[in-house]
Amino acid sequence: MGRIGWPELLVILVIVLLLVGTRRLPEIGRSLGEAIREFQRAMRGGSRKR
Image (cartoon, rainbow, N blue to C red; front, side):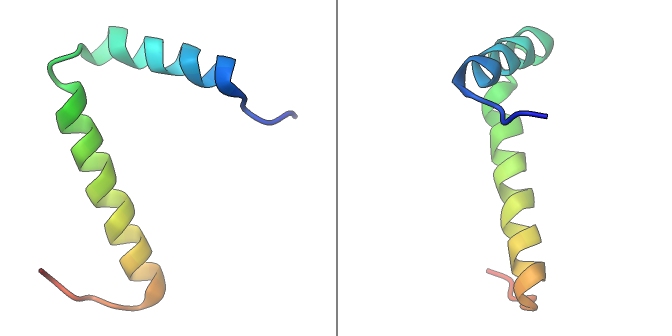
């Protein structure tokens, strides 16, 4: 299996835009960012809240 390149990422982005629409995209991005931060915090062993 090969690596995912820019053309593949662009196709995935277009599909996501078609599925969720442009209005919900910022909300989904924000939620994804929070989930990634929580995952990284858990991997470091910290449970610090803001």
